[in-house]
Image 1 (cartoon, rainbow, N blue to C red):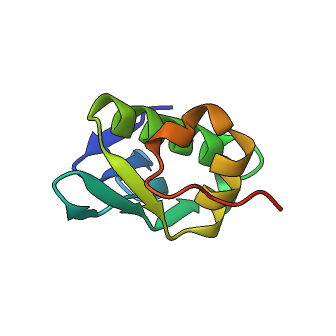
Image 2 (image 1 turned 30 degrees about the vertical axis):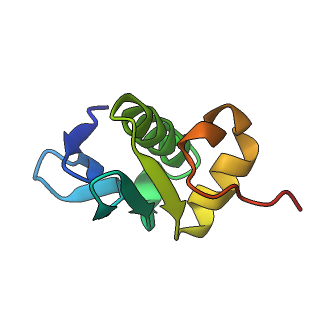
Length: 96
């Protein structure tokens, strides 16, 4: 599966260029983004694609030395389950 990195999003496309999965993180300013959306097509669900997208997004933000606010419920859950990426967060998510 090929993950396409664009400014403020990572996407998986079908051979016909239909979006099959994506995570979007628009810039709030030069150093901060809002991870606001994840999507995985039904044909890919249950295969760890959403988690792979989040891992790639968090790794890319870390590489760019950017911080993230979380506006997506899946992203919040993923960061709660992957505390090794808490340095990417501008504000810490709470553990329930």
